[in-house]
Image (cartoon, rainbow, N blue to C red; front, side):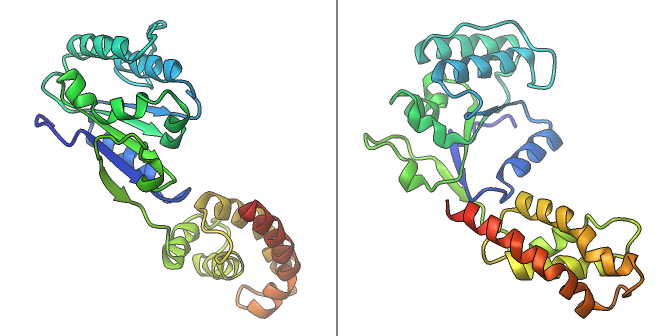
Length: 249
């Protein structure tokens, strides 16, 4: 906490591989001073820099926000950043600036990304910039060259991981084994075309009532997997066409 850490960290992986969740959990659990900004929401350099300063001066993005902080360029940002760090008494701690959906930085002025990667050097403050992205660093790196960040890769969830995560959401009126069998069927259909955890959670919630229909009507029990599969198969195949078209578009 009180030692200078690596100036910049680049974390990449596909959607819903846990990048944002892990970073937010670590920062909150360890109570580390931080700023967390989504670059899609703050899509210009001015909006982004001002939001970082506002969160920093407020102490957290979740507390009462300060008034607007005008910041026209990165030189102004460096000056205001130093003032904010001093006012918040953060000189002796590592401050983390996390930029989610950081690929948006490539659409901003050419100096923004290199400056963030060297922010520790430019400000002479104990700050680490963490970039979260869905693309690899080789496609992210500016053609003009820049400071190389420490890179981390978040792999996609394996089918076993997805099975465990999705099975935790079973409704209390049904047994855990019954819901786990349903998730196993769901992944058997969708895993090859979709690894997105949020999408799979949505599909699981959307189709579970159809899976349960034979049990509700008294036509099958929880162990009659053949009847349960026969009832839900056309619904899953129809849903798979929609998911497949969305994945390749």
